[in-house]
Amino acid sequence: MASDRIVLITGTSSGIGLAAAVAAARAGFRVVATMRDTGRSGALLKAAEAAGVAGRVEVARLDVTDAPSVADCLAGLLDRHGRLDAVVNNAGAGRVGTVEQDGLGPVREAMEVNYFGVVEVTRAALPHLRATGGRVVTVTSVGGVVGQPFNEAYCAAKFAVEGFMESLAPVAATVGVAVSVVEPGAVASEFVASQGIDLPALLAAAGPYAPALDAYAARTRAAFGQAQTPEQAAEAVITALSADRPPFRLQTSDRARAFVATKLADLDGSAVQHLTAGWVA
Image (cartoon, rainbow, N blue to C red; front, side, top):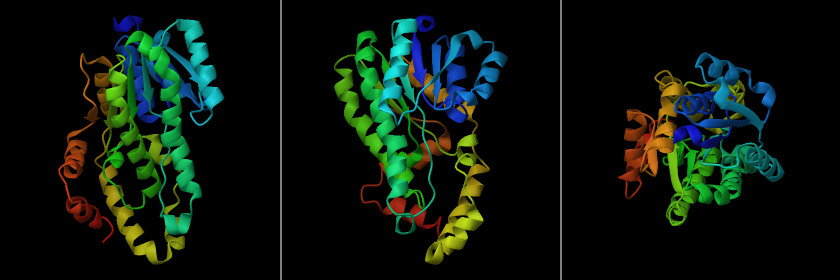
């Protein structure tokens, strides 16, 4: 029964992670809602209280880039609950820029949070998920399927996550663990605001890339004007957690499905290049 199942969700202080934590609790799961800074748990706890599920949500510290933190969090969870039935890898960080100007630092940082953090949490959780026939659900992005201008570091990390999970899924299935990825498109959440993007400063420093960056920014503002809510995006996470036979890949909206479909049917890459070239023209 879902009411007996324990799910660990990373990155729950805001956005999809917060919405997924509340939705999972409402679906009957006991939720260990993790975040790097537990001082930011107020919004989650308030939302859980408003939904009537405060008793099913507990906050724990976890920094996905720190292996001892991951180990400590899992050890505490097992001490308290004795089992782990699912992990939702949601913690992540965005990056806007281009490699010629940014260098490798931001690329490495994006990989640490968005890729290596996911790998570490999944690796540490798998023995416990094998014991329960559990699930690994990872929130990636449509940017994990379609490369997007000025998102080189972010998309590279999300591509890596998708490749990792697509490769792991059949192996994990042999030991009873289901693996799914959830691909949101534009979501109206604090994730975007939290990136601290100073567009005027970026444009001033963009040099020959300034016209393309300005065009990209205008297109992105329009896209987020039609964004879905975190709660809507979290519905796909709950499907992956609850379905009898969850699919490997789930998009969170019709827009996301149409966008991803462009890539999955694009054998020579020309359709995607034509599409994204229009964003920077």
